[in-house]
Image (cartoon, rainbow, N blue to C red; front, top):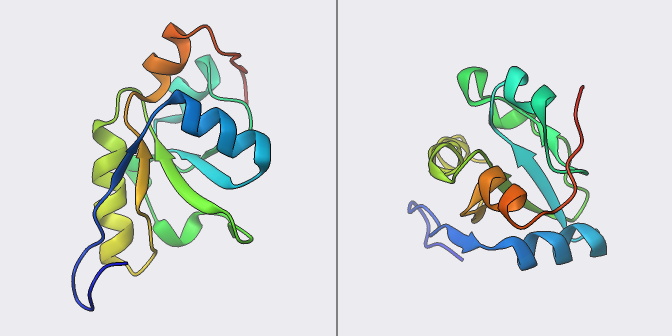
Length: 113
């Protein structure tokens, strides 16, 4: 847990962490890519909150799950994590490899809205 007034460190999660967390219902995976990227393909079970209009308060209620951010490769999710924490929405993890890693592992992909 971060000290008062400081940002939490962001844990780099891999595909095994993401698949396990989704399967157990332990994480809320928030994809911060843009709608056109999302429509072309996204991780099943994730929700879209685009970075271009990112409002951390628009993240659905995690209902006890850990919020984990994801993007194409891990860069935008780190930016979004910083924005969320500055806004008082606690985020301490992201999918370091993002959607590219997911696809490279041959994991299932959903398309469309």
